[in-house]
Length: 99
Image (cartoon, rainbow, N blue to C red; front, side):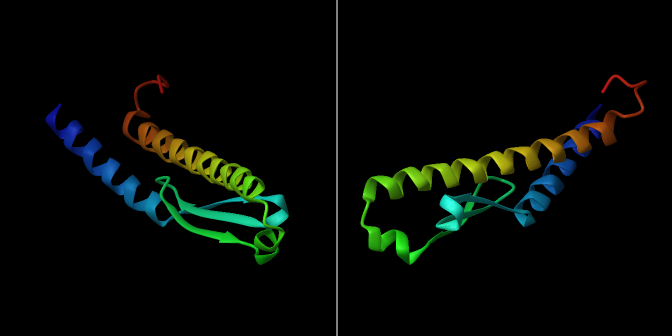
């Protein structure tokens, strides 16, 4: 039992490292805003097209940032869930298809 717990903790650490290395993006308004994050949902960069600043619409900028951030976080969630499912299958896959 203790070995399984230690193995699970080690695998979780490996997954976190892999997720740190995975890049996801969220794009809004045809690329006017691009948010880059990692698989652990940490925002790495925010790129805003100069044309959007020139329009001077603060409310639109805020709305587009929210859209792009949410898209990036959704992708990060998907990657995260895939990694966790793979770990679970790897650890418990020999239990007669219970997982």
